[in-house]
Image 1 (cartoon, rainbow over the protein chains, first blue to last red):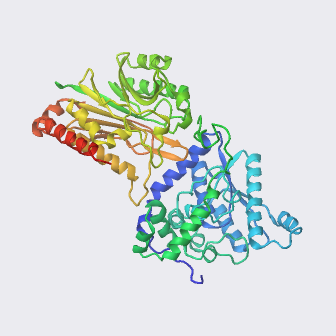
Image 2: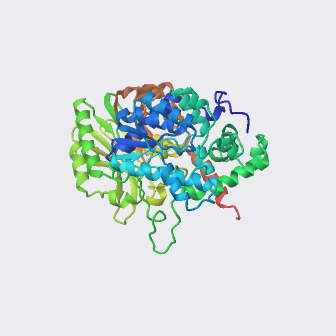
Image 3: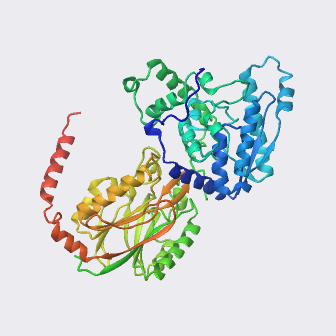
Length: 284
Length: 290
C-alpha cells in the first residue's frame, strides 16, 4: 500500500471518543490495577510507535514520570527513526529509559538456524523483548504495561507471549483509529501519530501492507462485526466487499487461541478456567 | 400514607474491595460515622457493598446468613440512621442471593433478594446466584419504601408493583459497570440510568434513590453518578461520576401528596385492566400448541 493513511481525517463517527473521559478512565485504571496489587511502578517497551507512546503517556500521568521506565529494545535492523521518536517521548514525559540492544542474543540464536525466515526472527525478537521486560519488572518491582490495541488483538497481529504479554493493558479495548485519536488529543508527538504503523521487525515493514488493508477500513468493519454483531449480508449492505468481510472473519476466528490461555485437557470436575472461576482482582 | 415532614438521605457512592468483607465492613463503619455527623436519617450503600461485585466462585465464601455476627454489627450501626446494605445472603437451603438489607433502629427490617440476575454480555450472575421471587414494600418511620437492585429496575414490572403498593420511596442500590464510550461527556450507561431513574420518579410520583458504586474490578469501572430523584422527576442531588462521594438531599415528603394531587396518575391506575390483560397474554402464550 503506497498511499499512507491520512491520520487526521475525521474519524468514523461511531468510533469517535470523548478524549477527556477516556483519558480519565484509563489513567484511573492504571492507578487502580497497579496499586491495589501492591505495586507503584510500571515498565514498558517503547518502540517509538503510537501505541507504546500513548501507553507511556497514560502511565506517566497515572503514576508520575518517576514510576515509569521505558525500555528501548532495538535490533540492529530497526529503523533509527523509531529510536529517535522513542527518545522524543521519553524527554517529553520525563520518564526514565534504558536501551538494550537485543542484536547479540538474537544473532547468536539464529546463527544456529540461518534458514529462519523473517516471521521466525520477528517473533523471536518480540519474545526476547518480553523476557527482558519481565526480568526488568522483577528487578524494579514493577508491572509490565501492555500496549496491544483492540484491532491487533482481534486480528492476531502480534506475537503470542511476545508483545501480547503483559500484566495490565490500558489500550486493549481501543481500535487503532481510536488510539490515534486519543494520542493526538493527549499530545503524543505529531510525527508519531502521523507515521505509518510498523511492527519494525524488519526494515521497511508496514502493518497495513502486511495486513493487506488500512486500519481505518478494517476498524470500521470490526466495529460493525464485533461491537454491533452485524451479519455478513448486513455488512455487504453497508458497502463492505464480501471477500474482505470473510477474510477478516476468518482472521479473527483463526487467532482466537492467542487471546486465551492454553487449552487444558479436562479430567477433574473442577478444571481451571472452566469450573474454577475467580476474578483476577481476587482480594483486592 | 405519608403525612409530610422531611427526611435527610445520603447515598454512599463508595469503592468496594473485591472479596474482602472485613475491610468493606470497616468502610461501612466510616461511612455511617460520616452520615451520622451530617445528621442523615437514611444512608444507602451500593449493591454488594460488603463483598464487591464480580465475585464468581467467591460467592459462597463471601456469603453471610441472617445470624451472622456482621449483621449484628450492622444492626447496631443502624441505631441512629437507617441503612441499606448490600450482601450475599446464604439461606439454610444453601441458596445464595444478591440481597439488600434494610436496617433501622438497631434491627433488620426488610430483605430484598435481587429478582432479575443479569446473565448476558459482561454479566454472569445466574451462574453463581439464586434469583429472588418477591417484590415487596415495607413500612419505615417516614413512609413506605421498596428496594430494587440494579438490573431489577430494567424490568418495568418491579417498580410498577412497588408503586401499586403505595411506596413513597424506591431505593435502588447498584453496581453498574461503565461502558459505551462515544463523544458524549458521560458514558452510555450513565445516560441511560439517568433516563430510567427520572422516568420512574415522574411516572410513579415517588422519590427514587439510585446509589451506584465507584472503583474498578478486573478492569471494569463502576461509574458512580448516584442520584436522588423527586416525585416530579427532578434531580434533587447528583454525585459526580467516578469519584467516591456522599450525595445528600433533604426530601420534603409533602411533595408526594402535592405531586399526586397535581398528577393523579397513581389514583387513575387501572389495576384490574392490567391484570385482565396480563392474564390474557399469559393464557395465549401458554396455550400455544408447540
